Length: 421
Image (cartoon, rainbow, N blue to C red; front, side, top):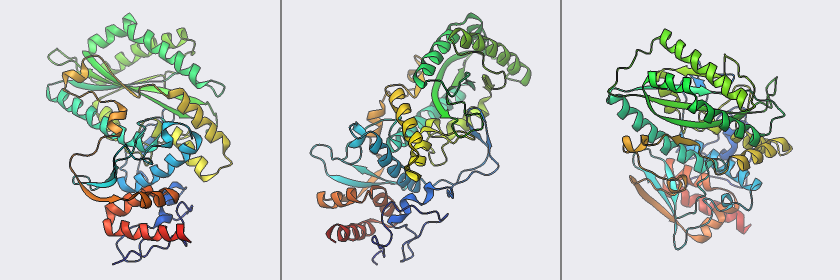
């Protein structure tokens, strides 16, 4: 049965405000081309229930997210096109658009996750600029972290999470702020009292994540807010003191005092006791990591949801919705240029080897194809040119996942009519 899409009536990228996207008239449940931007508006389909959001870091706890990876993937392709318009001469310009040398453009479907993806295309591997690569890399990194945490706990170890923030103002330059925070962090790790507390906690390794939000929409508008989340691996085979509330408070108080000293020494000023440093148990750490990679409601890193602020990828959404929002475009450019080349995650020396976690670069991960996948079909050069002309890359994957390859062929025919008209 042919899929009844009318690309002339519902052009690709047309902005819609409906909470539910229009579906294929045949009843298969797929969304036509217009669907690409539906969930980018204020009536976003995915919401958390009974959620709590930290006003300082934007971290979400509680609630359950309704998550459809394919619908999120369509959104990410649209956002990638927005980012590409801001960096037309970067590797992002070719990402998932140009073929790898000697390769065909193919669509594969994961047997495990039922999601679809491309093969044979170039990727940029940027976790900072590219929403598509960032999501794939974040998911693979999440799997690595969870594997290490599971192995550590199985061996009798304990996981805690340290959150470090520093004062920041709207006038702060992001690059300068990062340099000062890096100094403060170095002072902190080498501080004798802090090292003594970590030794008492039995810390044998850590994974540090660098994140950032911006407060331009908050009442205070305190500008850029880079901060760190540190997963701490408590020692195995040592006499660990119980992580009860009293012991936790003692450690937290001591560590905050040392962190505050280090921030002042680095020229950042003194952080507040309420938000400067937090020490949480393994439950909080597990919840934090479990949401790594779920990009739709922005639960991770520079892609997560902030209560009164915005994430860098929120700037792309804002600019997509309103091309007059030049500030959003400028802030994303500042973020991407400042963070380029920096590591999103840092594992302490020997921790990956201890738990047999392989060493792969972000670029290698972005180019990796799911081993448990099957080939759905191959796209000809003419068909691919038509897809690029209407920016329908996400639609192809959505149709392939939900309706099969025949629906994709129907889509190719419909957009070819657009090009011929």
